[in-house]
Length: 132
Image (cartoon, rainbow, N blue to C red; front, side, top):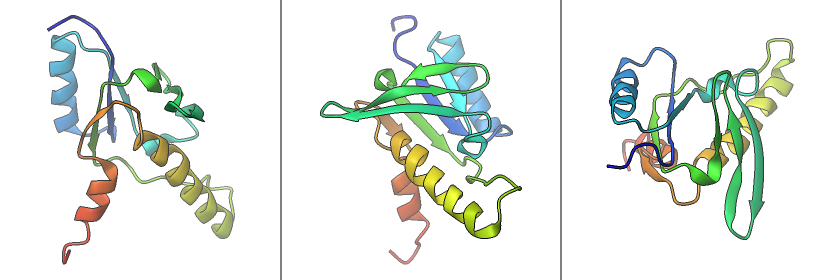
């Protein structure tokens, strides 16, 4: 396996021991990794996105790393923290902000061109409806 190459995006909460093991193995193999929790958006995670005829692009940045979204090889989605609103917002504005974050950042992360997904977030949502 070639050293480096396109990065893997690990979308999970900070205290996920299983994701820690995956990241340890990716590091051992020298695969670039960017870990983020959507619950940290927009305070600690930022997105500068583009959408055109070639698909989704742009840059995603955490406190310690950034990634060109068009270069992400794989996404490992595992139990991230739910999106949250700023506590200074009133209830209605907070609900709106959470939905916009879910559709904006969440939609971007779920539609990366050429990325392979382990636990695609939309399939996770489908799986939550057990009768189906």
